[in-house]
Length: 395
Image 1 (spheres, rainbow, N blue to C red):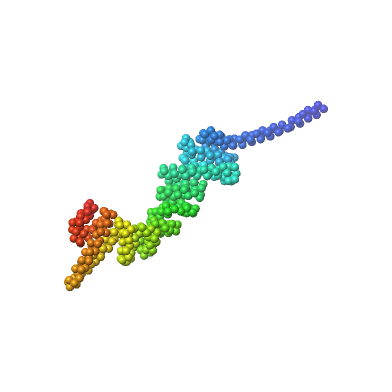
Image 2: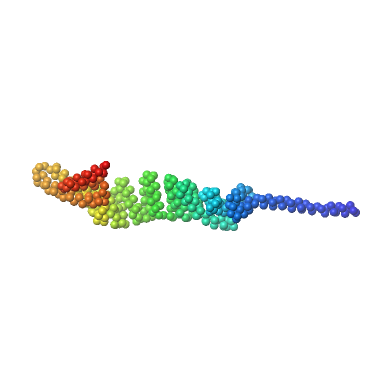
């Protein structure tokens, strides 16, 4: 009986295995705690304001297979690096652009892991929105330091945060231009147009790039797009006019210039340009009318005054040439009249040349024309003054 009793006591000790199971569970709990300790320590150091230690701990956590897949880990890392950017002390330990990029990537990872509607997804989304300003400022800092490539990187990060905001695209375009990356600048301007942005300045920059690349076809395309967006913009009209004129398409330019005059009837230069086109198109009477309108609008318009002077001078020269080619009989009959009329035209050219000289005192063509015209009308002393002025400009 005693034996049986002892046997029962022995069997009653079997539940000690539960103690072993409890120890295994405790060991597992300890391991999990150790794996999460890096995140916990990072948060504690962050709260204490020791961001260097927080950074060390959180960078451990993102390489641990147990914590690297959690949104909390990445959200915490984003906060720590964002804090480093803003810190006057720890901000010196990591370049602002690098820390901002790390914060952006961390918040983005948190959203990707658990979605925008999760606890950390929502908080990370809000943080990303606030990070826009940091990314933009980081880009500006790099731009001012002439590190244009890094500035572009920061601006592109800002674009990802707020893809519909035009500022980051504009700044990236400016940085690309400063970096002589015209393809990159055009890409940014293209993206701006893609989000519905337009401005005269943008088209002006695209036009400048096309000219730097010596691409006339691209320049004309920019101007055509600009005039679709801003059909009454005087600057774009004039640019288009100049391109037509410089490419020898004067007749086509006449339609353009009349449209420009309708938009800007007090622009004296438009009438002067129209006169020049008509001159080239062998329509002297209409050219004269346009030049006169130009000086009526602006009496000091250099081109119009000079060309009116040339018009009268050439009329005089033609009459003198005809007289010189006459036979003696013809000359005795009408030669003197031709020369008198010619002298009158020389006289009429003078006020225009003089006005042109007032507008541009060192213009050699004007000085030379005046010197000859003065001589033709007998104003020898004035002619000599113009000769001396020409000589002084050659020194």
